[in-house]
Image (tube, rainbow, N blue to C red; front, top):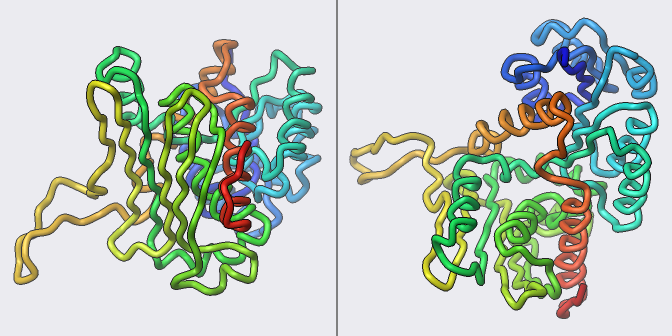
Length: 337
């Protein structure tokens, strides 16, 4: 098959990274067009990435016959509608997580996607492409730790990005849809089960601005799964040392630990402060390889006519879990799915 014509939609902080990967690091992809409502972002696409065709109107991009697939890196509130529009325009779709912040919108997308079985629809659960997380899944499949019975997973962002995030929580669905959804997806993937209950605690301990959107800057959730296993999730937006994503899978015959120390490199610094290591500073630095491999897999799936690694049913399950975790925090009660 010839190269897949890609239209990138949304060129914010993460959208620019995705676009760069698609232009420079994704075999079989040709970035045909970019779409944004921000003129400076379109100028970046033209001058930094060499994308000559740009749009401010998403419908005009979808009408371009050279665009085979869209890469949506847009606000959560428009994900469902934009996916549906792309499918109905005959395009394959990659969309950043989450699929939506309510089950009804997720189901609406799934129902439309079923009408277009030859078009790929996938959601960006990037950790499924991280080499270390993939290696852990292979060890589980080989029986290395016996039966997985518990997952401990955390996503901890740097404090210096918290204030930047506050305005986005008005439409993002908050901490669970924004962040914990990754950990939920990993737990499902490793435990081979669906979440059945959630109990959440947390609050705004440092950045009170999240309260205006009924959101928080730290949370912990203890969740049961329908095969008798469990998961513990921790999320924080106030880390001082670096971006700290780590996961532990406990099995009946052993334990797998991923990213327990979020080091940026193999250098040890020895000075008057002692001996220390530098940490990665943000999620893109930590998952740089995974973002690249995610784009490669999407394009390869289109060219090979196969299913993507992460499907829409995975996405709706993660949304159900995020809703339960959020509802538990707000109600201060155990929530059953």
